[in-house]
View 1 (cartoon, rainbow, N blue to C red):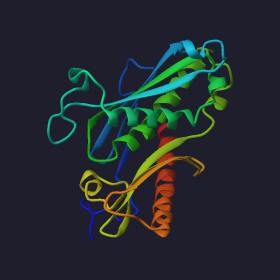
View 2 (cartoon, one colour):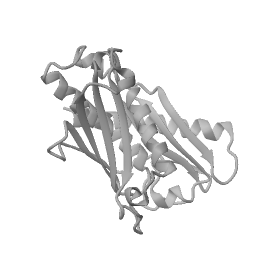
View 3 (cartoon, rainbow, N blue to C red):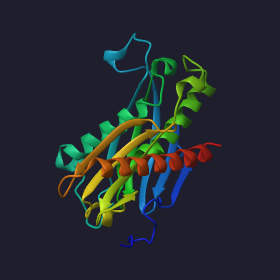
Length: 241
């Protein structure tokens, strides 16, 4: 069964990471996974939340949102609704956890970095694109702190590994990498996988959308995801040159 965009089962969509897309934040990246576009910004503040003061540790957290017309139909802004939805909370926490896995908070010192990931256009994989782009934005924010001698440790110790994420799934019995929206809604199995540049897992989220799945199917999906994350790690490395 052909994919909607003609890719092979193990092919990523075209990936672009544009640094410095916004002039005000200490780090900013426009990340594009095919038709999915997410603006990731990293904002630095001196000091940490009250519960962390005096610990010598920094803090990294994230917030995720979608523009009202990021999809085919307009969605109300959550600020207008007066509450943040469960999906938004879940994705924000996932991004924060993923990025904390790549940073030494002691070497960061008592500085805080907030990663804002705003979906400009959605075509599947918004959370995985956000994690992949937020890593590059965070890297630039740490470089900004290093240039001002505001880190507690050496810059190379602060960002001690890279982190990227990709979606995988089974559609019509076939394991596929980096699902677009049309595939995502039809997936029998749907997973989001976060990996380090060395291929270790940070987080695996997977579910049988239309039933159960076997161990060999899980293994094939994880193999696809690790290979995809390795390609994304190389794209991040090139973007940071």
